[in-house]
Image (cartoon, rainbow, N blue to C red; front, side):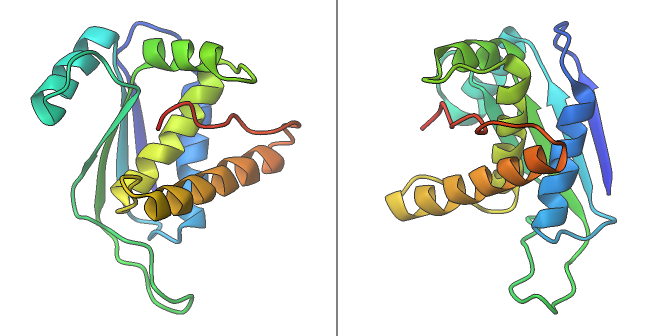
Length: 165
């Protein structure tokens, strides 16, 4: 899997963890190993510009996803996954830091960025959380992926709960 992480934010982030959790999520979702993903980390001003341009909403947000080939996980275990360009995930560490601090259990900016990376991957794969049943499916899958990744790395304790709706 080709995953590029480009930090343009000026904030130090754990780029290796972002790369690792993205790779884990894509593998778990059975995405073709030759597929490509780009993760861009930007500052609040750049994120606000993207948020206004693409969502017509003011202020910076935590994560945005821009799908390319609209790849989807294979429907059956024995189906061959398609390969292609997944697209871009854009993360904002300033918003992630604030959300992590405000979370009920509190967690670090990097833990929030890991959660947001998985959230972005799921959006690229067609998952959404507009409707209650979609939200339950996406957030359940998101938690399972983050928990599985954390368990593989030997990270104890509960994974961060989503701080977005």
